[in-house]
Length: 441
Figure 1 (cartoon, rainbow, N blue to C red):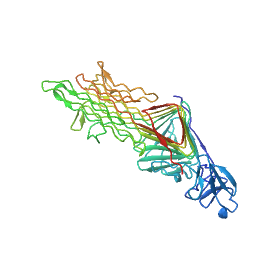
Figure 2 (cartoon, one colour):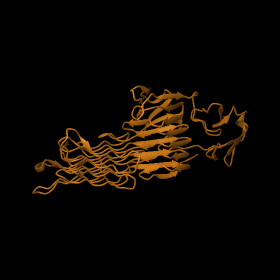
Figure 3 (cartoon, rainbow, N blue to C red):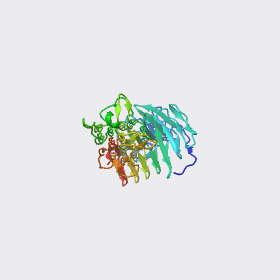
């Protein structure tokens, strides 16, 4: 990946959602430069005393005392008549764009969804932590989401952005979002992506969506595999141990098919279960973290020729241990704008299960969910016995296999959702995307 300096450009003005004339004023009564707020509507110039001037919609044109204005997304006839604009989902409101004047582009940026900090690849701060507008970029924490606002966001070709934090990530643009590089909101090892669950590594399993823990068999010094995190489908089951005179010890169940990961509300995925979990101690390997949740919301258009990904991580097997953790489930990717063009890829694939044994000196894991294709992540292998594959595309995750210890099950794929009025979707979505109409008012 090419690395370099970030670039941050600023657009003058205190309010720049850049709507066409006829759209409602901001809650504070502001309009784009060159327009004035008259009776709650943005009009060209000072309106020439429009207090007494009728404003009307005719087809896709708004007529006022300054003339007729074409409304790109249609004319709203509710009082006062105005050019229709996007009404975002998930409780995101247009007043968050007030003062967000920056056009943000750069190389190797990381977004902290909990405190609003943005840093570059050198560790230099692009935006300091804190709520509100800083350096022309807004941030607020709302209903489990970290919402960054700007005039526009642009991720250049051959560059990458990432995010981390307990909150899901929202990029909200007054104009456009253009993704030509890679935006990775996926898990890393045990740790979930932004808004995604961590893999289980001891302690109680959070819920039935999480992969279940495998148990430990003392007589064989072996762990049963952990189940993969659930999502769009059930996660793969963890494998049992080999049998002794009393039989085998069962592996963890795959997490159930669940509404998280979800795009509305915006929620990340579910983690994989641990292998050999006894009394809060993991004798085998930990589960993989789940893919996070990311929403790209723009008032005019979103264009993606690169990749936006929220993969689950592979389950692991610790050094010298028998038994693998379950793969993390994929997260959620949500795109919402009046116009959406996808030439690239939107993915939320599950991670592979951990191998049934490990004689190395480091943890060995199944594959992380694939970022730019719909091929399943493979489970980790030991003596030609593998963990389950992760879910991807229309392929469900698979169960782990048994050696002496049990391998982890694969994590399920997550959720992809596109909401627009005018879309051109020729790229890849894995799993398959759901789509519906964006709300314009």
